[in-house]
Amino acid sequence: MLAGLLSGAGGSVAGARRQQQQQLGVGEPRAETRISARAWVGWAAGALTYVVAVFNRGSLGVAGPTATERLGIDATALSAFSAVQLGVFAATQIPVGLFADRYGPRRMLTLSLAVMAAGQALVAGGDDFATVLAGRALLGCGDAMVMISVLRLIAAWFPAGRTPVLAQVTVVVGTAGGLAAVPPLSAALRAFGWEPVFYAVALATAVLIPVAWLGIRDAPPGGAAEPGPAGDSLRTSLAEAWRQPSTPVGLWLMFTVHFPVQVFVLLWGFPFLTESQGVSETTAGYVTAAPLVVTMALGPVFGVISGRRPRRRIPVVLSIAAATTAAWGVVLLWPGGHAPLPVLFLLAAVLGLGNPAAVFGLDIARSGSRAHRVGAATGLANIGGYTAALLAMLLIGVTLDLTDTDYRIALSTQLLLQAAGAGLLFRSLRRRRKLTACRPPAPGSGWPQGRRAPSCWWRSPGSRSRARGPAGR
Image 1: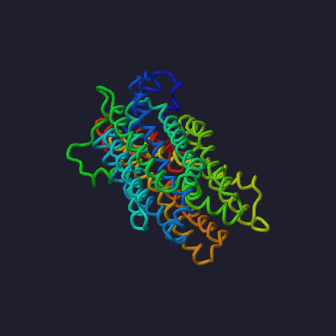
Image 2 (image 1 turned 30 degrees about the horizontal axis):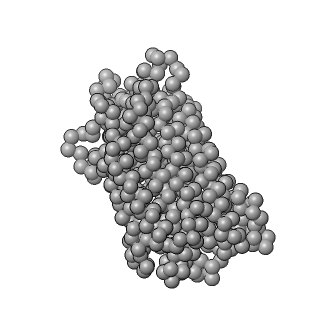
Image 3 (image 1 turned 90 degrees about the horizontal axis):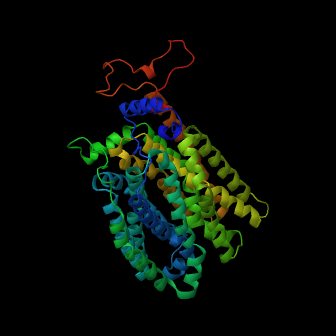
C-alpha cells in the first residue's frame, strides 16, 4: 500500500520507509519493476480460471425459472441452491487461504477447475433437488479456491505498486465470465435445454485443467514467498492472520459493500425484474448484466485509488453503501410498484459499484500482512461479502414465502444487513486505530526492546495529535 504512495519519492526516503514497514510486520510483494513474460502468462492463466469460476457462479441466476419447473421447487428451495453454494464458498475461504500459502496457487487453481467441472456435471445430470444441490456445493468449493490463489500469484510475481490495479483487472476479466452467464446463457437454455447447456459448461471447464497446470508457476526462480515460522500449524497461521488489525477491517468492509450486487446478479435480480416489475426475460438479462459492465468499466479506476490514495478507500465504500440504500429505496417505493426501466438500470449500475469496492477489503487485508500470511488474511476477509450474500439470499427467500411473494418487503430486508455491516466496519476501524497507533518495534530492528518506536511517541499527554506508524495509516 505504502509502496504505491511513495513510488515518486526520493530513493533514501522510500528505502527508509520500506525498512520501517518491514520492521512493523507489514508485508508487501516484490518491489522490482521489471516484469517477465512468464509472469504475464501465469496471470493470464489465473485470470482465465477466474472467468470460468464467475461464469459457473452466476449460471443459476438466469436458470432459476427453468430450475423451478424442472425440479418442482418453491422460492425457498431455489434460494437454497445459491445459499449452499455461497455457504460452502464462505466456509472454505479459511482453509483455502491457508492451503494457498502452504501449497501454492498452481495446485490450488488446477484443483479448482477439476472440482468445478465435477460440480457442473452433477447439475447438468441432476433431475432432483438433492443432486443439483450437491453440484452447486461442489461449484462453491471450486470457486472458493480461485480468487485467493490468483491474488497469491500476483503478490509473488508483480511489484507492489501494481498489485491493487492487477487485482481489479482480474476482477474485470472475470466479470466477462459473469456477462457470458447472463443473456447468452439465457438464450442457450431456451434453445437447447438444461442438460446440453450445463454438460457443455462442465466440458469447457475440464478442458482448462492442463492450461492452468502448464501456464502457472507459484513464484519466480529465486523469488519464493517468505516462509512462515518453522512448525506453524494451520491453526496458528489462522490465529496470526486474524490478529492482524487489517484483517477484520477487510472482512467487514466486504460484508457491507459486496453482498447487494451478489444477491441481485446471482439469484434474486432476474425473478424480481420479471415477476415484480413486469420486465421481459430478455430485458431482465440486460439489466442484471449492467452491474458487471460497470465493474468492467470502473474496476481499474478503483485499483488506482487503492494503490495511490488508500485513505480514500473507506469513504468510497461508505458512499457506495449509502447510494445502494438510496437506489433500492427509490425502486421499492416507486408509486404503482413498477419503476421505469431507466430507474432499474440506474439501480443496477449503483449495485455494480460494489464489486470493485469490495476488492478494497482484499487490498487492506493483503497490505497489512506478511508475505506468508497473505492467503490466510485475504481468505478471512473474503468471507465477509459471501457470508452476507448467503444470509441475504436466505432471508429474502423465506420472506417471499411468508408474504405471498411480496418482493418489496423481501428485498428491503437486505438493508438491515448493510446497516449491521457498516456498524461492525466502524468498530473494526476503531480497533485498528487503537492497536496500530503505537506498535512495538520488531525484534532485530535495532530499537531497544520495551521502548516505543520513534514514529509512535506521544507528543505530550495533552497533545491534540500523535504520530502514527505506517501500519496505522
